View (cartoon, rainbow, N blue to C red):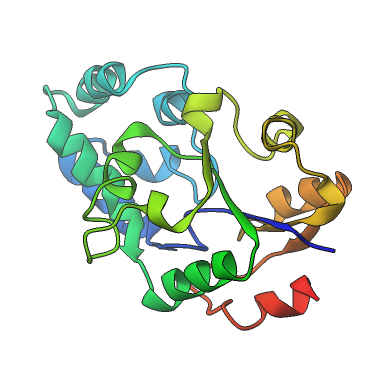
Amino acid sequence: MIKNIIFDLGGVIITLDQPEAIRRFQQLGIADADQRLNAYTQGGIFGQLEEGKISAETFRIEAGKLAGRELTYDECRHAWLGYAKEVPQRNLDVLRKLRQEGYRLILLSNTNPYMMSWVQSPAFDGHGHPIDDYLDAIYCSYKVGVMKPSTDFFHHVLMTEKVMASETLFVDDGARNVAVASQMGMRTFCPENGADWTTKIYEYLR
């Protein structure tokens, strides 16, 4: 019986627009941003930021070196937020519904302080509510210090939440992440980025 649902952020709760993020970083002067940014995991300073190895300030400084000029926090934030195409209202509605139905909702995301400065702000849903209003717990790669698809990230969440893998549904648009979660005993659902998963998710909860 499923009691807990672990959601990915980008590609599930929000729709991702990787080309827009790449375009914004290129506009800042990072010409090879397309080689540095990935839909699921990042490399170099981008990956180091999301794994918590460097701070947002260090990223700003190092990104400036790549761009050939000093970058501001707001410039870096604007570029990262290029990933956020939209927050479908249907997704938010079903999150509220699932909580009302008694499921514990958990976020597990490879992300960074720039993205979360928006996600955890009143601007997130367009109605004055941060994502915290829709979930019971939030786990971010840069805070935990590890990224999906590492089993360490999943173990950390399961142990901290004191929940069983067999009673947990993991929803992520990344096939590698879903494969690892499945191997650990979780039920998994892998919708495509931007797909409407709000009805089909109930097939996995039965």
